[in-house]
Image (cartoon, rainbow over all chains, first blue to last red; front, side, top):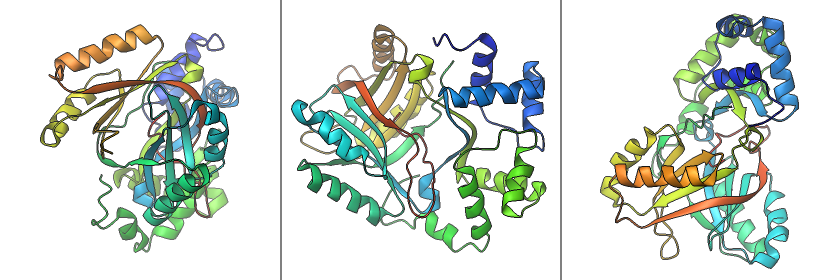
Length: 151
Length: 185
């Protein structure tokens, strides 16, 4: 629970994860459904973006439909080098997320590039730069991509 | 959607679409988010030379075509108190993976679920799901629920909790900034 959020904020975060209306005054429609005032809703969303609870307000794109390529990759990084390698990997603009996880393969990151060839090249460059084997786990099928969390 | 290299990439079909330039400009303008004002689509259109109705019409089509998978907010799970974030992976026979994946997707605590390529011998696992929770014991109980209800008691499995997050944002590529779907948050 985030103490900076009040009940109204939580209701807003939960409601907006389900989508946003494609009508001229979408905030007015959402506000009415939540019993809020349009200006109050806009002000709260602005604050939730400002304090980092919401990373972005807008569309989720499917990179592949735009000709792009995305994958999940992992490396087994020696503990002593972990932070230095994380910095190298994070410096690539193609790297979106990077997590340390509990496994021999302890660094997991999402890579997105403009083309499949660009993606392969980025993975190769990460391998050369770090001197580590990059394991590539491309998606073969998706069963659920909702990623909705109750505030 | 697959990443089968032999298939025609959907992007190639889109690139041949004469409607693309305005769509691309719209997508570019949206990558930083929707304007937080009472008439956001009209304001978006003003910067692109499109009417409010044209913006709405294009967004409806991009949603229908799956270029945009959803319009709304992206939450930062850590800031909402979701600190027990587990990637759970199974080594499921390929012919069963679709059925099991669809079954897992029906559980509300599963936030993402994919089939991915294996990388043997180090990584024999092909079914990946994410569970974002606030407490580790709750997440472990949820993993057991999945294991039992999907008949996976004898299937090799790993639970990889995240320890630290180094970067969480959309990826940027090409001339513009296109945020990708949050694939493994």
